[in-house]
Length: 383
Ligand SMILES: Cc1cc2nc3c(=O)[nH]c(=O)nc-3n(C[C@H](O)[C@H](O)[C@H](O)COP(=O)(O)O)c2cc1C
Image (cartoon, rainbow, N blue to C red; front, side, top):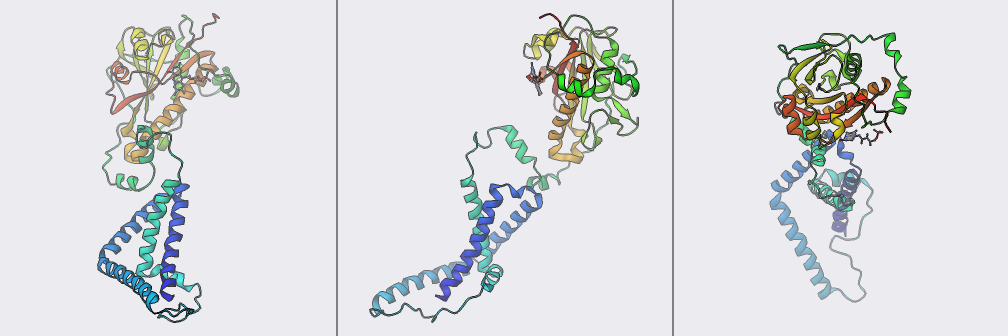
């Protein structure tokens, strides 16, 4: 009986770990990297422990098996009718809860913990509701899981993520269009109040053939992501940026803007100017590469938001891509609200042919890639 209680001790400690394992797994309590890391370390200890004590464990298993079989045989052979089933250990002593502590620090206790943890995790997986798609068939899910702080993140931190690249991209030899200054004070209040712009913003797909003015384009770019504080180092912009690393570049494909030749332009943040990358009428290209969305050729300008991941990688490693997309969203919403406040239309675009768009802008699509687009222009009043 004593032996039975001893076994029960180990079973209980293992079970306790299993239950906590289920709870941790079901509610994702292992999201903190140090929890995950401790789990893996404990798992490794457990495996090492089992391996180092394999002879004893096998011996103990054999012994238990023999004693179970032996006591059964002995009981069948020698127990007199009506005799008490007391084993050779004698009557069961009183056992206070101190057994739990002893059980957890002993070898068998540790083994129980390891088995319990493994069992709990497996059980936890089994109790989880089935995912809507096969795990691993959505690259977004894979990326999201892999970019969580955790053991992979710990491994990732020993990878060489390289050096940050230049914060400001420049086309020094490109013809330049200087944009009118946008004052940071009273002049900004001319437009629609912020709350009203937020409340009335809509995605507009019907554009008038009237060109936008250079002032409107200047203001649109400035409010989208222009520099608002400091000109040196990581000067702050209208849109927030993780670590003020600003991975988003803006290109403008101008269709109809007074005083600006149609073409592909890069927005130079520090100079608040447009650098001409290519001259020409790109309406047909943008429509075709924007999956035949005709309004992409009817608006005044299409903004392209590209991401330079290397600006963030040395600091944010695997999480950089998450932050880059979030930042494109901030910049995009600024553009929407800026357009709305000026009475212009805007429409965010996620459906486009990546490679063709990147080629049109002259970016490689790997180190710098388009992640979001936005059409803007004079709104059509025709019903
Ligand atoms: C990431 C993103 C991608 C989008 N892509 C497109 C698109 O390719 N074509 C389009 O016509 N609208 C696109 N939209 C606009 C949505 O269709 C629009 O926001 C939605 O219908 C809600 O309407 P509202 O913006 O007028 O409130 C996109 C919006 C977002 C945020």
